[in-house]
Structures are given as C-alpha cells and as structure tokens.
Length: 389
Image (cartoon, rainbow, N blue to C red; front, side):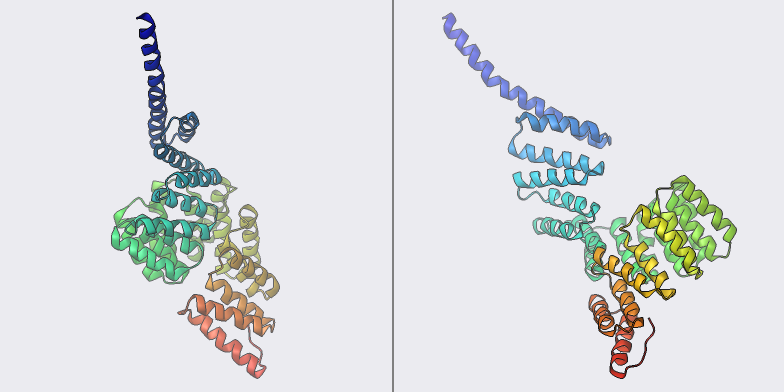
C-alpha cells in the first residue's frame, strides 16, 4: 500500500512540474509587459529572455514573447535585434499582422524603405482597415521619395481615423513638393488634435517661413520651446527665421547656443547652412553642410542642399556627385534628378540631362520646372544652342 501511495505521489509531482514552470514563464512575460509600459526596456528583455529560454511557453505565447522583446529592442534602437525577434514571431504565427508592422518600423529606422514597404503591405493584406498600417506605409513611401503613393496612403489613414500623425506626414510631403499652403492646412489639423505635437509645430513654422510669414513661424517655435525647452532643432530653426528677418546678431547667438547644447546634432549646422544659402553665401553654407554631413553623411536633404550650393557656384561636377548620392539614398526624389539634369546640361552632357529630366517628370508628372527643363534640353540638343544649368 505504501508503495502504491509513493507511486501516485511521484506521478502527481511529475505532472505538476510543467504546470508550475509554465506559470513562472508566463509570469515573466506579464512582468515584462509591465516593464515595457514603464519604459524599462532592459528589465523587459531580461524577463523575456528567461521566459523564452525556459521552453515552457506555448507556441502562440512564444510568438508574443518574441514580439514583446522585439518591441523592447526597437525602443532601445537595437534595430537588428528587433527585426530578428519580429521575424521569429512571424515564423511562429504567420498571420501576425502587428509583427509585420513593427518589423516594418525597424526596417524604416535602419533606412531600409523597400523592406519597410513590403512589411507594411503584408500587414495590410491581413488587416486592410488598419489606419496605422496605411500611415506607416505612407511613411515608407515618403522615405523612398514616392510622394504620390505616400499621399494616397496618408489620405486613406486619415479617412479611417482622425489622428495627428498622418496629417503631419502628409504635410511633410507637401513641404517637400513646395506646397506650403496645403502643408499648413494639414498641420493645423494635427495641432488641433494634439496641441503639444512639437514636430508639427516645428514643421508649421517651416511652412510659415517658406511663405515669408516670419512672425507666425517665430510664434510656433516659441510654443514648441515651451513644451521642449532647449530643443536644438527648434532653436536652430528659430535662428534661421531670425536671419531671414535680418536679425543676424540674434540669429548667430541662437545658432551658437544650439551647437553648444548638442555638438553632435547635425540639425543646427544644416539649418545654418540653409540660412547662408538663402543669403547666397554659398561658401559659408557649404562649410555648415560639411559639418552636418560629418555627423550624418547619409542625410539626403543636406546632400541635396550642398549640391545646390555647388551648382550655384558653377562647380557642376561636385554638384552632380551630391545629387547622385541623394538619388542612391532616395531613388524616387524628382528634385534630385531635376537638379542633376541641370548640372549635366551646364556641362553640355545633354543626353544625360534629358534622361534625368525625363525621370523627374516620370516621378512627378506635375513637376513644371522639370518639364520646362526637359523641353529646353531637348531643343538645345536639336539646335546646338547652349543651355544654363
């Protein structure tokens, strides 16, 4: 009898062990979720390492644990680790739409727009009514310079859910395509939905500045700085507006403050370069762009603007080099093709100029300047007349 009781007790213990182990593993997952909510990403990763490593989670819960750990890695800026975990989650749960979306965000953070587009499309194939998915796909299109596609996706996202973020994203497309009125309209919507949306305030200030409404630009930047005192981008942009207003001493002091506060941020250098460029002080502008690119050599906006400086100085080969670098980074940027076409034209390389103008028009059929340049380069080739870049 004692032997039978011993056997039964042993069996009960064997059966109970996995149950307790599973409870411990799931408890770690739950604690990790709390850590994520508290932005304690290191603790979340530690807990999830234990839960995943235990082997005691179900297949579905393991997929969720990989997703949560990928989210922690993404928030820490460890994009490769995040992509690996989201991929493992998808491998365990093929219709894990959120994992596709988060992996797309990680790819975008790495500058991998094509991979991001593929992931967001996969997410939307599973959930076509996901407004965030459409907004993120639009972000990926915008990163790749595919502005028309981005506008469509932002519009879809906005029609599904009134969120400030797609309004701001669409405004950035309008700003990039020289449509400040449309940009301001969208940024008004974004700020109405989220009054402390500092990125929208800065971008609306840029749009007002592009219209010459400098007082409104300063007001937006001052509001942004109330929410984020000492923000170097806002300070640098405010300095640029002051420079446009002719208040050069105040502008110079603001730039100095911005650079001193964060010497490893390229934004103040880039913005100061833009200010010099607006004043046609091209050598000074290039000096600032060089400093910005020393910090971030792959910023297409800085490269495009430095190329424009070289272009204005008649240094067409250097301009072409910068425009080509932009095209490698953002292959669908019509402006870069148009500008490079102008530089080729100035060097009498008309076939190359025509090819670039054609590409600019193909990418943006409403690009009037590129159409005009294409017509001029074509006539120059036919008549042998010289054109100016």
